Length: 345
Image 1 (cartoon, one colour):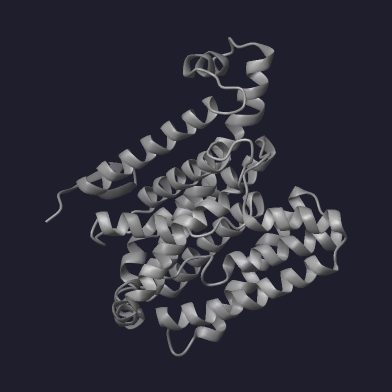
Image 2: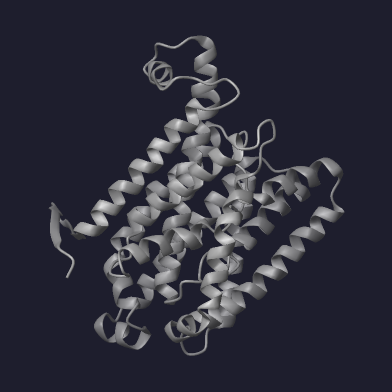
């Protein structure tokens, strides 16, 4: 049995497992360490000491421009994007009881992408407009998926199949819009659709950080209800008559996080699928591990972006290409284990 201990701060309390605490600490240390390494590596390499001096206000104009203006916000956006995708994936997989369920598989990211492309191509929208379009598109996609998949309850496997269909429809709509747009707008939207952190700056960090500050505590506060929902709808309703409201809150938090990070960096694929699976296997499925999934997602994205930026100099790949190379085999492995997945869904 895994050792646990109770942490209580005023009216707030939480029971933490030793294994989860160790894993969470390790992944967050790795994420921060890789983020710092990413700030030192590039066309203008800098020693870590120079980076730290610059952050402390003792750098030159050149090091300030390289570190504070360009590399640091990009690394922080990568960490925030990965953390948000990790939490969203963990919540959706636990709600559906299926390891295949993630925002990119069930169409939430495709809805956010379609909404953002409409705003980019149709209205030439600013960052705020793109974020609004992504939120609206993600909400429409989620409502459509859950409405079609509902049959006196939710089957995780049916949710995946319906989500794949909705995602295909929305992806086709976005592709159609690209074909109708002028060259410049289509090029900008196409680069964004791959998922990239290139050129991300402080304004891009703001909506993701705000989303995490608001929605992550909401998800953490509902962890106990998430445990009940994993027992099945009927038993969960017996144990907690207001469990339906908790499901809606958790869904809204996961969808909101997915939409915000998709609007900021594009649909960076497979992070929300892979990060919770790593945590689930290490913790043997005992805990949702939301903070640990967040740290794992952060480490995956910031490491993938470093590879995308430094491994093919002078060329740079979108981070979504690297995460797809890592995540696609994981998805195939999960599909191969379909009998077990179907039994759990």
